[in-house]
Length: 114
Length: 111
Picture 1 (cartoon, rainbow over the protein chains, first blue to last red):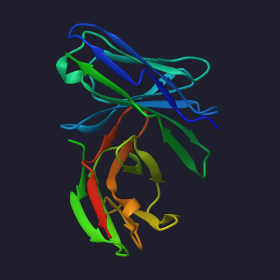
Picture 2: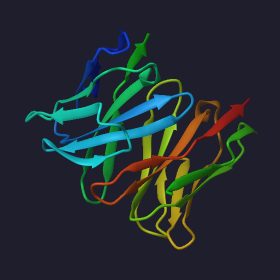
Picture 3: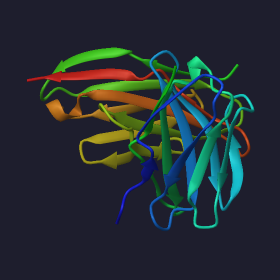
Picture 4: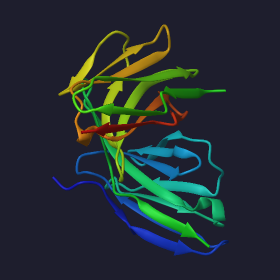
């Protein structure tokens, strides 16, 4: 079974630009969550999508948005990039089987804003 | 304000030791508590705990939740150098709210 894939793996953008990151979940997983990880703030939850609907949201400004497609693939968009948006962006897909829960992370997209 | 606290923040043990990592939380609308292991890459999911007193086990790792005292522990027995990592605790709140991560415990297992 293929794992969670994220593209691109590395990205360099300039302040003010926008960026779109992509995440393909494990086949059969309908939930995709996004996280931001920085040395200063640690791991922070961005949002979760399930069946094309945002089900959960963290405390990030509206510049951060996402969506999920009918095939469960998800995209995250950050508009008007700021230097502080430089981070590792992780996505994870999960499945809740009632008596068990599984979650798998992708390798992440390293975004550098200059 | 919601918060998740982990202790210790850093720990060095010898191979074969048993370690206990702590996670306490003050969160409204608690739904579940999650443990992750992170080496120099993306986190690996370990456990999700929703009910008090029910131990979850996976090999040498186990975890339990106390919803009355608002804490969870992660035990690792017979530690190995491969257990060296940052262990993250996170609390998930009920629907349409958020997931809050603790700062992590950095565990180093030396031969």
